[in-house]
Length: 350
Ligand SMILES: Cc1ncc(C[n+]2csc(CCOP(=O)(O)OP(=O)(O)O)c2C)c(N)n1
Ligand code: SF4
Ligand SMILES: [Mg+2]
Image (cartoon, rainbow, N blue to C red):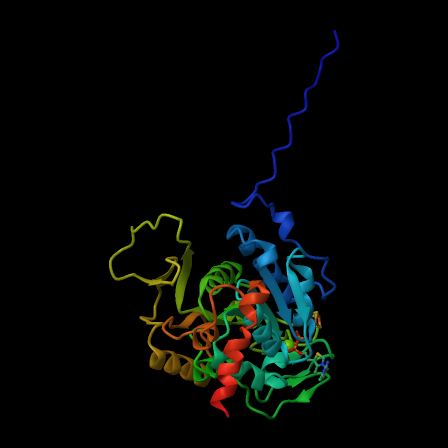
């Protein structure tokens, strides 16, 4: 008698709270160099968007020009996207956010795009506190144009093609702090877990959230002595705290040793849980953040984690008294004041 072999059914793919699978958060295949740090960050963005059940149609992927700025093509194909001019992502994002506050901008920029040509735009974005996640994929070089030094390159560094860098670096976290930014974190593309938890917190933050992620350029700047390389990051990364993010709907289990954990509650009830490591560091203290960054700069320490958080500042939408309804969704009658209202305004100038 013939034996009938019944094949077990393949398990159904896992879906998130809005019924989407991990594959629904993918982008096009990457054209970046194999091993580029930017690809690791794209992977974490996809993982987090799935985990948080973000609706792709709510997201606008914003970028400037550079290998980093190309990367939004490689994640969340179902989201909206705009590849702006070099260094101009902040102003385009400001416009998009003003037109439709219902959208969640995830901006990806490079150290050249932000720290060189785009520094002015970056600072004004922080000043306005436009709600967005602002990721800097920091590799110390202009990767796309073949490895010239950027404004974050180490002073005294020598590169085969670029020669000697004689200028001191700009610390983009310090610039963000001086610029009044209320969410500043630094991470390393080789530390996937930390990148994920910081991304989740940044997405739930109300205002501009800056993530300066050291993202090695394996083609032009990955030598052991470069502070933007994989070998250096792996050897020298010093977490200021171990971070985990708890979304509002999840139950918060309090089973930590007293004094070992600091919890920061965000406006939507979600919580950033910071497990203290060696340093007793308070990321809500702005002066402590200045000291931390300056000391790290002087001692050449590669510190990562949540550097500063403050939710008290109003966003551009609060300051401009915009309605809760996105402007893009207001009907004609609401957008256009009636004739009498205009007459009244004109009468004031008569
Ligand atoms: C106005 C303008 N100036 C210069 C360039 C040339 N350019 C293209 S990308 C780039 C630098 C990119 O470096 P970065 O932002 O660090 O991105 P990476 O490629 O390193 O990820 C430059 C100078 C340009 N495209 N537009
Ligand atoms: S040149 Fe550098 S930054 Fe650009 S894709 Fe290659 S490794 Fe990445
Ligand atoms: Mg770069």
